Amino acid sequence: MTIAAPPPDAVHATSDTVAAVAVHEYARAVVEGRIVANRYVRLLCDRHLRWLDRPDLRFDAAKAGRAIRFFGFLRLHEGDFEGLPFILGPWQAFIAGSIFGWYQRDEDGAWVRVIRNAYIETGKGSGKTPMAAGIALYGMAGEGRSGAAVYSAAPSRAQSVIPWNDARLMVQKSPALSARVEVFAHALAGPKGSSFTYLSSEAKNLHGPRVYIAIIEEEHAHPSPEVIDAMRAGTKGWREALIFRITNSGYDRHSVCWADHQYSINVLEGPLPPLWSSTKWPSRTTIRARPGRRGSKTPDGRLALSARRHRPGICE
Image (spheres, helix red, strand yellow):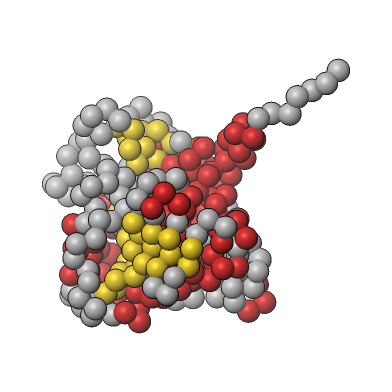
């Protein structure tokens, strides 16, 4: 008897679903105390598990898993890990899976992503910038969207180029990506007219782009909301646009970063601020701990979750 092999799409769908299991497992492990995390990470994971019971929300395991598996095609480019696959740690897989896995119906009845504004606050050296570069590459070359314009944005050119340069080097080290993405001096060009470049208020080129994904580098260093506001204004043409902000805790309590820090706490602790109606759920995911300090698999020391206990609200 001959047993036919499953079609490639079926194999990929199964692999994606398996990869997405890590998202739920991380949330359960945090809530049950098997992974040590601060109060805000616990609240976020508890919300994830409660959302699984909501009839108006849907977790698309295949799409979440596809985003997680995409990182395996990327290659690291520094130190002892040069050339190795970028395998996400549990906390990173939770972030990627949450962003690309959660869906709700919009006013037209179409299923769209819930999380479109992600604020990721972790300690310096935790691997947030390489992860942001991977998110950018997935939006440009992994989702298959036509004309997906991805930007790394910051007040200065020196800041905004950092995630873009990580992405450039990942492409050059990855056979799978280098076959699909062209590298230019200041931009990456992907399939179907997609692109990834960097912008800054210093270069006066923030306004006008049509933004699918914006990577906001080190938000604690932003002196004003100019960069974020310009990127948000550019997302109007995309129902599933994503603003992906990364930062450490900083120190200025009169900054745009502190305002986001406080707003994220309000989202997790509830009740929600008045600007959110009952049908518009907060499009934000917040990670506030210091993962990845031991057992790391990335050059900058931050892929695996640390077992060290953190003070609530402190992420240095």
